[in-house]
Length: 445
View 1 (spheres, rainbow, N blue to C red):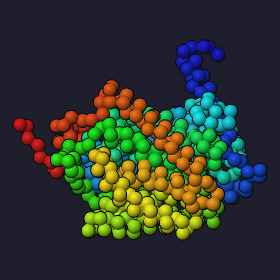
View 2: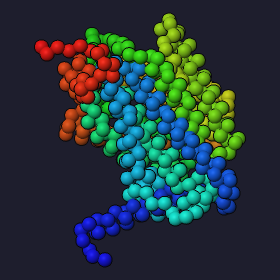
View 3: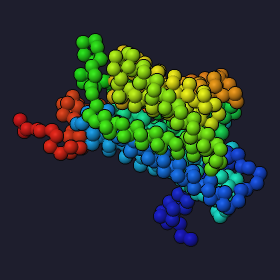
View 4: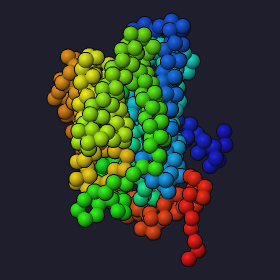
């Protein structure tokens, strides 16, 4: 073979890609006996359907964020949401899968930081199929389902910084956080790291997805600052959303997708386990809706639809850590408490002048923390101390990583648009188009 520059580069990339074979296969607890081909097909199909349902959550996020923000920023919101899915998948393909599931022999710092290699390279033949994890799912199924979670963790930040952040700054942050935030912290539990060793439990991501995204959203909201006119004269002014119909439809889509988010996290098509997770997920959401409705009704004298919608999401986030291991009665209580605290959290963040247009901090951060701790309170199989340790460790790390990324973006390219651009609206200033043609009228003066 002739050693030209082109051949050398191709060979190097091939080695790096195939170095990722270890990945999740090494960390998976493979059953002693492989299942039948029929059961493998059913298991694999259900998890792929779960990935589709998680994907369906992204139009849900897009509609919620668009509906709860101003019409003049709709194109910007929609652009960020579809870009986030692409960024999450590409980054997870290039580096994320190898960082989150390094395998037993690829820890750089034992249980804390690992890397099995760049790209994807599945085991050959049946080793990547029916023998990959005892017949529960294939290598490719493992990647695509987990990749959808990576995109979900990052998109939480989008809503909290809506209406005043440069698109380029958000894209830069999304790439970096998808690579080094979600993946490193997630490896501590789901990748067989140190949190897994102390029996920390986060079934589908109250911490590893929602609060990891929520802590980053907190940093972003603080660093970019509030929208113009949000806090004037020592009081918080309401800035109504543009389309509560969109927001409501978005919440329905998110609830729909959550059945895959939680249900497919069983990682098999076990009829009893999947059905049980469906029940705990649905009941927590329903109870969150009712308790947030009552709480907002008492506090505001009238029921606030935005609070009702966030109550649904709060119940879903709250149950995500323990949907597989708490009783149905406990899931109802988790949802009730989630629906109450999300309302108080919205008021709290307004009181300390942290502007969050869509309630992402209240839903994903606060209820993500609550849901993780609830596992230690309500599940007989897990203790509160490891859950608390996991919450603190993930929170501190997410804060540090996101703060570093946001700071670098701020001093290099800037985070916030100009005052004139913000008042004009990001659709025109950032994209040169409107979501609703003719909605805004501009002059050349």
